Length: 226
Image 1 (cartoon, rainbow, N blue to C red):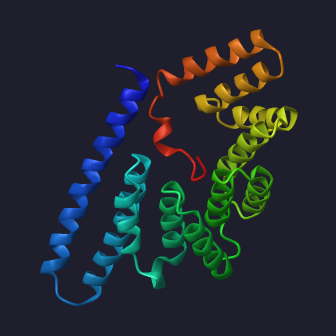
Image 2: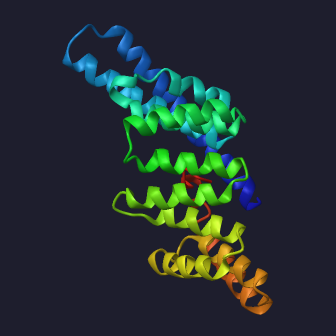
């Protein structure tokens, strides 16, 4: 089976598991009366809705994912709701709606790593790579403990802009941090190829394939930006 077929199968299996868990929690919630246990169960259900909504979008089912995020309460999960809905709207090419949503979100959560990344993704979809880069650099300032995802997004944009030297520096650092992620080797190879070093590119592509084989499920946790 080809690697992309394995990835599709893995994502579909994940969806089935999440759907089953969602159904079970819904049934439990319907049977439970008011109280602390019911509130805790509802919070767990909201978390699962976000996980399921994101997984649906990973499979290209953006409208379905949007429905789940729309059902999340603003009061308790506002940042996540802005982020999930913005991703769906961006992917469905409702760019004006996505922009307005993210602008509101960033007014409420100005230090949100996820929302700045989402804004960067939006500008990237619109072809404004310089503004996309600015958003990603802002996001990195607010990154959680590990800023690898933001740095990878930055390297990706720098490659699009032809700033290969800067992209190479970031990718080399990411490879040192996590030598088991094939994306870093593959993009490092792309940089080498575009810079006119085909033999070096081939070495990185080969390393990417070697890493990919035992850990082909790594793409199930791609960044928000991708």
